Length: 211
Image (cartoon, rainbow, N blue to C red):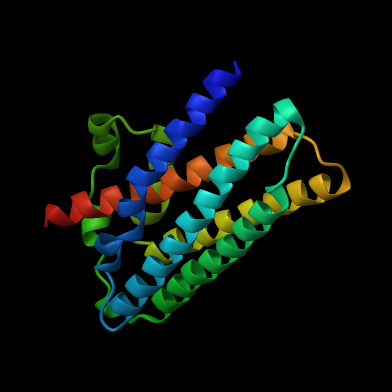
């Protein structure tokens, strides 16, 4: 059973490396904004994505230590990994929040998200074998041309991850142990956030090509 868990962590690490490119380059969503907002948003999103994946690397190492600690009850680097992950996620959240705020200042008469509004999300999900629930979550924002909401959602989800990490830190500070449910919850939240950003960019890139 432990071997299966370790294999699953390796798969998540591999998956994270695939998603990095798609989430960092959210250009096909940014293209709906006019300049100079588009360029400023792109810069903020790129920086935020970089920080997010640095935090994800720390989080994966935290999972690795938790997996080992469940056996030997040793957690030598957990505190440092938690601090690093929280710090990077906070910085990433600020960048995504900034992107959303810049988008709010854009002249609405010059924004054009028609390519996202007219996109066939259901067909895209079926053809690419994507998770319907997450695609529909993405659709809720992009099909309404709400790129600002899309970035704000990422910032909010990062904030939720930060809160969850803080809870785990308090528990580990009080009593070093393997808190299984907390690790499971963190893994689910982080994986969903990766997919949300990935699917959004996949939609944007595909929809923009159809113009």
